[in-house]
Structures are given as C-alpha cells and as structure tokens.
Length: 127
Image (cartoon, rainbow, N blue to C red; front, side, top):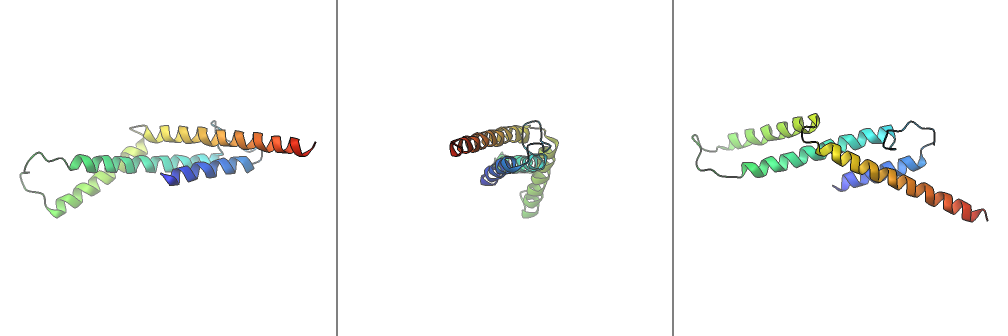
C-alpha cells in the first residue's frame, strides 16, 4: 500500500510543478499521472482479490473425490490469480475505481495546498 501512497504523493508533486496550461484530467491530476494511478489501483484490486480467493480456498468441506494433490493446488492458485487479474482489469468490483478517485482527490487537494502555500510565501516575501 505504500507504493500507492508514494504514487499519490508523486502525482501531487508533478501537478505542483506542471505548467498551468498543461492538459489535465477532470479530477485535476495530470493525464500521465492519472494513467499511472489507474494502473496502480487496478493492480491493488488484483492483489486484494487474489488474497480473498486464497482465503476462500482454505475452507474445508471434507475430503474431495480425488484428494488434494500438489498439482491441483498449483493449478487452483494459478486459476485464482488469472481470475483476479481479469476481474480487476474489467472493473467488476469497482474497487480500483474507488481507490483511483480517492487518491486523485488527495493528489488534487495536495496540489491546491501546495499552490496556496507557495502563493502565501511569495506574498510574504514581497513585503
């Protein structure tokens, strides 16, 4: 999760140094930063889904018909990972979108705060 926080901080810093007339996404984050944020949020959703599926697989309803071999366990892990990636990329749960929106708002708020602080320091220094 620290990677996502670092990405949000990086987006805020990039937005603060970007020219005022640069093309920005609707939430105020630069377009390139917005794409990175979307990718990170989707990856986080995939990781979350993998962990959720792994915990669900730990349930035991009794012996299976053919037993639980090492090969079957590996197959199930790969199947769950693939399912998690597909679900995250399709936006089925919407978790990635919520994370992206939340971090975009934080990045935009950080940019506003940085701009206001810079303007206040400039005004104080010109007196």
